[in-house]
Length: 225
Length: 125
Picture 1 (cartoon, rainbow over the protein chains, first blue to last red):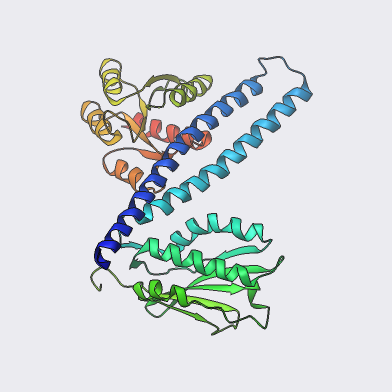
Picture 2 (cartoon, each protein chain N blue to C red):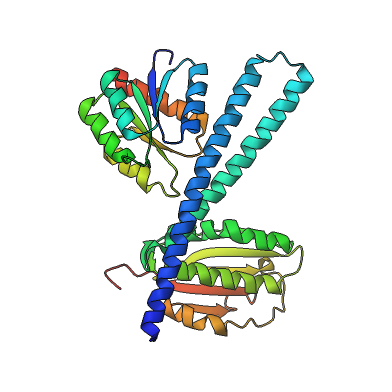
């Protein structure tokens, strides 16, 4: 099998997986919709006190109903981001905002940081131009760089992700421990280089801050491509 | 909002019925339909003031139902219900005549506010 056919199959796989995930998140939202309405109806009934329960029981019921509502809202936001994340692979190339893509992905990356007791902070830059590129490939690179960064960090340290603009390019900077740790090891990105090259981007350590790892991608329009 | 006649159209029967019950508790006369065809029959036989319409249904898409409702009764205001991650489908509904859209799972206060505004618009027309 030649490389082009192999790439094409791989691309189709990514698209299929994305569509399956998007369908899943859509169905889950329907389930959450029913849970939320049923819980809301219970809340209505409790508020009317048609059951004639005592104050303590009513308070317990209200607390439980509020807890379900909170969790449904959190799950709904996660599913919304999952849906967005999944739809990114609908087409090989599209025009998108890096901040949107990052917000979606960081919803799920945060778990890895939490398990390592590292604090994740996202600082999205304002008025960034849209990017015409391969969004699922960018998701993949962000995921890998994020994990490489976590490997460098210890519990109670932080990983700050900052987006910005550098001329016609958009930058995503991973600032380890908020930039306060002086002697960060040199991180090897060699296995990511072909993917970064495909995005026509660069990945560099250092710069403004030694603890920065910066991914730069061009903000070309469809016409410029 | 005591005199509003509302129709909820969603193929998720449990969702439509539970939401309808909550609307009834708030004094809104609510009926449900579980597919596009049933919804259009109900709109034809007993036109509601407002419709909450799911975007994705098996028989007809919400956008098709929206266009049929609007061609039969332009004064009926429709709020689209979308489960999609992006707001694009909701905006597309508004371009085709929907008053507004709301994402699933529904925030009831948000929905009630949109219904109130939709009813005000309908009353002024």
